[in-house]
Image (cartoon, rainbow over all chains, first blue to last red; front, top):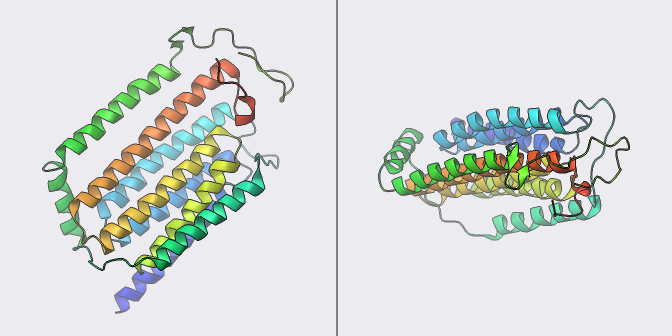
Length: 189
Length: 101
């Protein structure tokens, strides 16, 4: 029983961390800090997954997101104005509508969670679950696994084609202008 | 740690993600909102796998597919940001009033 209590306490710590860090992502001035808050949120979610017995998925999520958020921080610094957050900055539109939509989405999903009646069939121990996943990956679900791999390969090719210097209709930056002096000036391709 | 509690945490993450995806002007921040939404779906998937589906391996397989979706979304999102920035010098959604390149 004491184990259950510890698991519950750790779960609530991770949950609070995931939600607070997720909220801070959209409340910080620095975009790089936003990327690291999102990484913290993902790491907390990875912890929740491990607590739930899905050790493999939790660890893979943390590893994948660590790399992804570093790339995201680099993209921020490359493209975005004011990446360091030296000045206070609010870059939002339709803030009220978005906040209402977020709250409504939360209330609706929480209502479903509370009203729903879920079957109670606990998972086996984590090592057994990980082993089963490994057998499944290279057994019955190998087609799904391979399809995911081919999808990622196609994504890599598509991303290079989209971001590459030479586009489908000539040089990608053909006709592009120097950055305008006025930040709000409309730039026409 | 009941199923309902984890689902409510997932709902909170989803709500924050919806707020971010709808309200942010910067492309990258918008993608962060989308990532939070997928993340919430991931938590809900894993808790239902662990507590309601008897931990069958196909459930975790679906989690692997979710991760693929996350990676695809991020990679193509960054590629589109790069392409749009090259042609339009745009880094926020308000600068893209026309889709015609």
